[in-house]
Amino acid sequence: MKNNYNSEFWKEFRDSIIESDGYKCSICGKESSKTILQVHHTKYIKGRNLWEYASEDCVTLCKSCHAMEHGKIKPNYGWEYIGDEDLGDLIGECDNCGSNIRYVFHIYHEKWGALEVGTLCCDNLTDSQEASNLMESVRRFESRKKNFINSIKWKSSEHFHSIKKNLFEIKIDEIDDYFCLTIHNQKSKKRYSSLELAKSSAFEAIENGKFIEYCLKKNISLPAKFKINNKQKDK
Image (cartoon, rainbow, N blue to C red):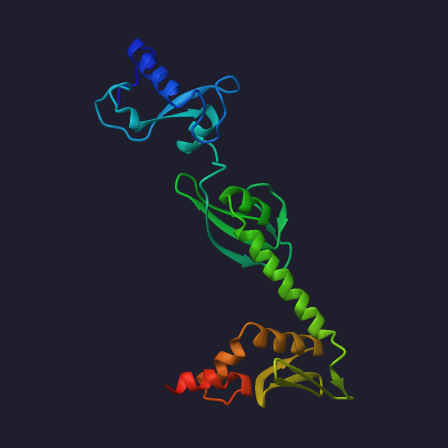
């Protein structure tokens, strides 16, 4: 593309595009009275002058949005959520705002690449509530787990603890310096260093459905309310 920005042909073509777009940025909506408007070519054809394009191949952008389109500055729109990760503690740093984060959200932009950001920045850059919705689910899960661990329904003796959750009998035995977990007569091979860790593991296995999946896979009979699942599996 020939760069002849001083040409009268280009100035006339540019002005017509800006007029067609209502004298405002097609992305952020800023008007010409508040920003510098420029014309962005959505595609380039070798050998053509700036004004030798169809109007549909050009769009009015403010200076900032234009720079984002060319990857010169980090875009604040058009990001895609691609995954998340729990670091376990505030050991991460948001690539966008620099704050310390525990939950990392991976986002991607075709003109910039990947970023690792926190909840608020993920929502803002992806123009969604995907991150905040996920964090709400995490908070609800953690709240339920805390209530389960501290439930007054636990029956405890000197070396034994039991409770029923979702019709599953949960038993925790204290042996020497570790704890053993049994759910629905299925004893875990894992040894837990504390009672709280054993309770937490029991809650997670039932709450996220992994224990049910395990029983179905191993053809282990489930409580009455799960019989329909067993029948479906037999078919």
